[in-house]
Length: 249
Ligand SMILES: Nc1ncnc2c1ncn2[C@@H]1O[C@H](COP(=O)(O)OP(=O)(O)OP(=O)(O)O)[C@@H](O)[C@H]1O
Ligand SMILES: CC(C)(CO)[C@@H](O)C(=O)NCCC(=O)O
Ligand SMILES: [K+]
Image (cartoon, rainbow, N blue to C red; front, side, top):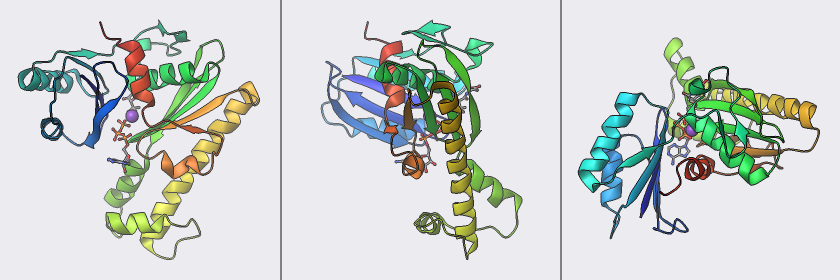
């Protein structure tokens, strides 16, 4: 079996594939290394032969995790590494090693699935946009705070903005002007996110007309999918790219 990990800033997304890499045996989202081990240990008949991972954490945090995996399951993790060029995509950063590896893999996956120009939008702790032209050239992208960061900044830097998660969820059932604090904040942040998305779409249209595919991924993709009906929501886009960057040896 194959273990795949996407180690983001807040969560680790994991999944276990059958040895032939065709079917998913189990998957989940956890907030710590130990929670990951716990989740994996509940899988019946787990027999890991291969592990590939992408991390945007520090090298120390990542090696701590790979050491735990070695000790617990006797599996060596193969980590995605930066590249100037891969699978037809050319990294557009001035310093290619500085581009977030989750962005890079999502682009590889997107360009592969689109077989042409694509706009990749990822909604995690941070929100990112990346532009890949038809010839595989990465034009660059944008990074801004995601929903969790936007709402936490408001909560942290004001005295009178306080509310719970359940109220936050309910507040997003509509986007009319808020009449409570929770509605005003949650809807305000979501409109910022949606405005960001529409701006990216305009830019993509200015480059490519209608000839491009939009991909939405990341934990909060559902918050904006309604305003981009033509987009492809691909929750495992990073894993698609991970399989390309770290093929089974
Ligand atoms: N099952 C889930 N578990 C955790 N978060 C989820 C889940 N479903 C949706 N979310 C939302 O997804 C967001 C986190 O996104 P995601 O897991 O893609 O990124 P991350 O690892 O936190 O950050 P990044 O990849 O930017 O470093 C949170 O805002 C959270 O509300
Ligand atoms: C932007 C995030 C946090 C998104 O997960 C990640 O891709 C990252 O840490 N990137 C490094 C900075 C950059 O991509 O320019
Ligand atoms: K991510």
